[in-house]
Length: 207
Image 1 (cartoon, rainbow, N blue to C red):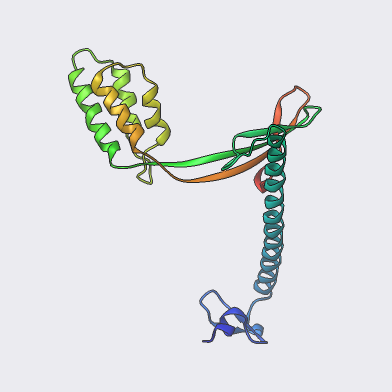
Image 2 (image 1 turned 90 degrees about the horizontal axis):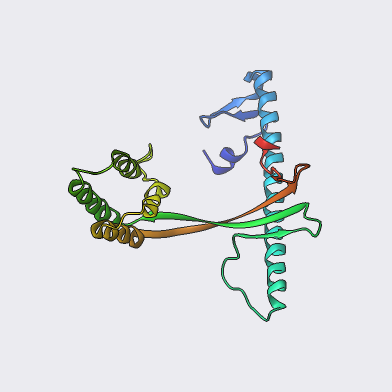
């Protein structure tokens, strides 16, 4: 079967999901209509996706251009990501926020930290708080994908514990952090009648 046949069935035929060519007069009318409806909707979705990509690029450019313009008033050139910044309209009714999200993973030093923490728990067995034990054990549990929650692990560093071995474990956690990639998000808000900013939904499920 040629690529042309795969991409477009010859006249008088329709290609099914197994790649077989079926004469149109052998295809049920409802299947023909369904096929047309689905392809029409997908064409619309593709056009919308193209428009959204173009608009997204324009919105990011407008945001970053303004931030650069504002910085130029102070003879400052801002480099790198300009995330976690908000622009608010003069009347305060609208807000545009650009945020940068980092994808964090841990290297092998996380296991070193876990070993040190286990040693701390062993040393504290006599008078340790069960709540702290539960918190620590929960922090190192993996989810269904076998991943450890970075938020739970990093939250351990906020505990006020002065034990030297614990502090070494917290240092190991800090050293184990690796940022694999960053993503930029742009969000839009409108102030409601109560004065709270409500996000303007841009995804189908919330429109």
